[in-house]
Amino acid sequence: MGAYRLKIVMKDLPAVARTLIVPKRISLAALHAVIQYALGWRDYHLYDFSTQGDPPTRYTNDSEGAAEYEYYRENPPDTPHRRVEMILARPLKLAHTVPLEQLLARGGKEIDYTYDFGDNWQLSISLEEVITDYLHPMPFVRTPKKRGRRKMWAVPPRL
Image (cartoon, rainbow, N blue to C red):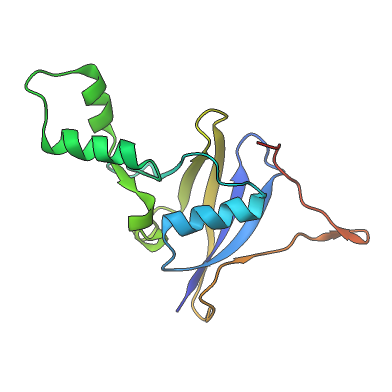
């Protein structure tokens, strides 16, 4: 089946990091759920994944935003509007329709993940290894190293 070993790091708090092993065919929406679990978050907010590819597409759970993007892409206004131009400047797709494998196949080894657009938690996701002999259908969150007698996680602030 195959899998990816990913490292996720909070950009503002680099001590908050996790290592994930996920099946190659995992969707971005499912990867979002794994990240939520790994960081102890409760999935209350919108999120997006993005790459710096061409075009710089955003992958999100914002179904209204994606519908608005599709509407204006198919029905451009007769006269230009700044708001519509901003919407169309960056393609928007629903995360559940895109496998992680598709983003990584484009040559990108770094993916940006933003959660909660109010607090704007930004994480960097980097590909550490492609695992060819991963036989499990489920993702895996690697546990932290022991410090003394206890396992310690660096945790993000409560949302």
